[in-house]
Image 1 (spheres, rainbow, N blue to C red):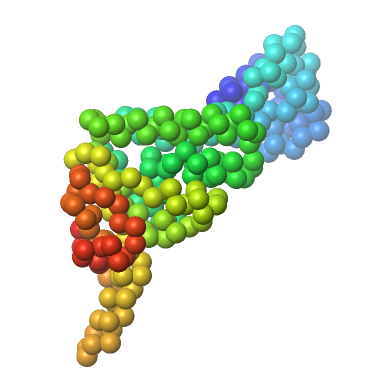
Image 2 (image 1 turned 135 degrees about the vertical axis):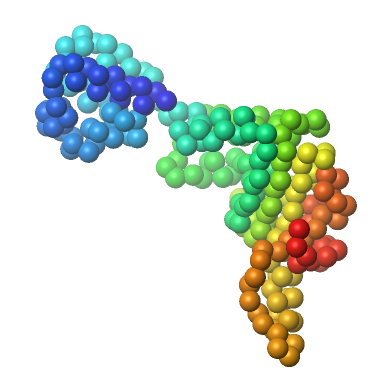
Length: 238
């Protein structure tokens, strides 16, 4: 948000002074598109641009005063928008094919993902984002006001994130109430059943509709299935 606000201030001062983006960019040593990206908050406004804009626009240090606030945002803009929508939602349906959903991640799993993102962030930002992700999980309290439905492809439980110790503790816990359901798409079990069907006379190996494994104790009180062998009825439709 700080990038967007600072960039907008540069644009307002520049427009008021009758200076074009081309003129500002030429004086500061930036291309037109780079100046545009910084004014729109898609790129961090650089100190050089602030200095030149402050001087050219006669801002008398008002633009330069923003330089101390141009630290990385606690969360990316797209994440802030998602979290706002998530907080207001009355129902959340989440399907993941590669990673465990943020609301079901352990602290160690979340830290591995965030600390290895690209571009990298400093340790302070990592801890802020981990804390923010864990805070979001409070929505899964015993009496939630939101309906949750998580569907995970089996690969999401097998994609290596960090050490084997991190992965051993990463399996999502059982659903806590009737407001939350968790299901797993067992890859190998479905593939095995399709293969057997294809071997029958007249059988086909078409993919068809998505298939899931049931929770062992039913929605709301189920426990997470850790693999195809634990599924009572693998490849049954939900």
